[in-house]
Image (cartoon, rainbow, N blue to C red; front, top):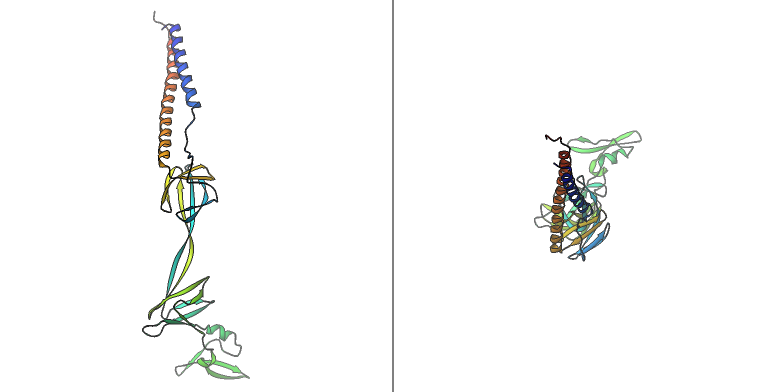
Amino acid sequence: MQRRAVAVYVAFFLLVGSATGVLVTTAQTPGISFENPDHDLSSGDTFEVEGEEYTFTGASENSDGEIVGSVERNRTAERSESWSNGSTVQLDGGEWTVRISGEDPDSFTLVEVLDRTAILENDSNADNETIERDGEEYVVVTENDESRLVPADEYFPAPEERSYAVDDEIQYEDRTVTVDSVSSDAAVVVWTETETVSTEIAQNSRVTIGGTEFVGHFPDASSLTLSTDFDSFEAQNAAIDRHETNSDGLWRVMIISLLSSGLFLAMAFMPSRY
């Protein structure tokens, strides 16, 4: 092949390759943006959806390099607990027995469970354990070197009793509970507590918040845009797909052009048979 012709072909392919290379490297990749989003948020911002308040807690990159964030809201939930007749509950640092009387009760009683061991240990005149004689329980009390038997019912104080009816309030553990109902089997107490509900949002994904569907977009790891403009979102996605398809084609053209120019150069320096 004449070297002059080779030079023309090489110049042509280098020109095509360099032109496509410039197009590929300088073309601006389209992104996702919304002119009038429903909510434009920074980390810690609050917003309302259908009367409920939400907080954008922030975002971060996951192990795949994708930005993922979340929004949270606090909601009030009702909790209940059933206290069976004859069971024990922890109250005011001690144990209390639930006592319900009658077939159709409208109240119940908490009876203090005495810590007899602690009472005996705190009395230097009494043995630390009770004894039984003839089927009766006694406490051995020693005073002036003389021991006597005191009936347990006389020695120990009468347990405290507390009665409660429907709608009465009780300080139980770290909360205030209300008596909701009483039956012959059990008393039911209810209370409300606040719980946090979190909704995860992935980059450029659809998410339902408070019954409303949004597109979630993170301009960066500290910002979140929520929009209901799905037409704009789909159009921008289509533009991104076209850009990626065109870029792939240009890369192929550039690679083929450079390979072709190299091939023609190699052919130009091949020894002639004539």
